[in-house]
Image (cartoon, rainbow, N blue to C red):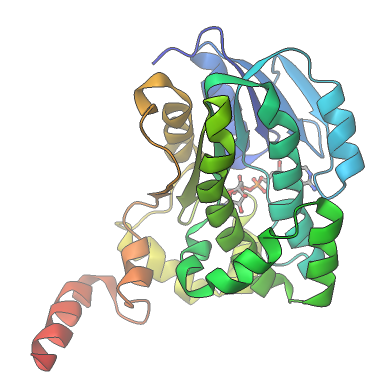
Length: 278
Ligand SMILES: NC(=O)c1ccc[n+]([C@@H]2O[C@H](COP(=O)([O-])OP(=O)(O)OC[C@H]3O[C@@H](n4cnc5c(N)ncnc54)[C@H](O)[C@@H]3O)[C@@H](O)[C@H]2O)c1
């Protein structure tokens, strides 16, 4: 699917899913503008150093991005091994600040893809707290809420991703006047440099369970990037205001409360539990 003539901003372009996304979008003809706090090894049409934890740095980077845009892929993120405030700054407040600065520059037909996580899948049960933070509309006000409601790094990671999912959903209403779509994409376990931190903060047992549920391997960045590219294009024109799970089937372990059950007995366990109660 060609993205010829599209100019797309990709955050986190120096590593993992963001690097794979930047490379694939370029391969499909897009002009990619990468943002990251560190320089990528791979070349791209344009690159700006940008620290998403700092709104001043975001504004400076955006000032250096010229012309109209057709897409924004917010891929950058930090794991729960960072402190809670840093996690919230990068994963939510910076992502939101960048999105809202760029939204008026996105051409009709464009898309914003927010990379969330299966770790945010509990957002429906936590909507009150998510809405409390999202109702603080500026980076500074959001940060004040974060400081008044301190969380550990691992807690903040899951909460930041719940907020990203809800922000992408409500973002469809914000983006509608511009003719732009807004979606989130939630990967399961992906083999990237961040994974070692997830093992420390989430525990290897849970990650192994998710791996088993997705058929015995983790995703590679190249499993996620094509879905981001698809969501950017015209063929995804009717996908809006929703979260897309890209996890090889692992989220059923969370959604059907099977995280404690071996993957090869999960189906019997699930159906058996239903049969016992009927
Ligand atoms: N790898 C997984 O298992 C997994 C699972 C679910 C969701 N995710 C999400 O996918 C996204 C990409 O992660 P990844 O797995 O490619 O990890 P990664 O560590 O390979 O890439 C993260 C990128 O974000 C950049 N970044 C971090 N802090 C930044 C900041 N303050 N300003 C600018 N850039 C910053 C890093 O420099 C890096 O290039 C993240 O949002 C992550 O939460 C990853």
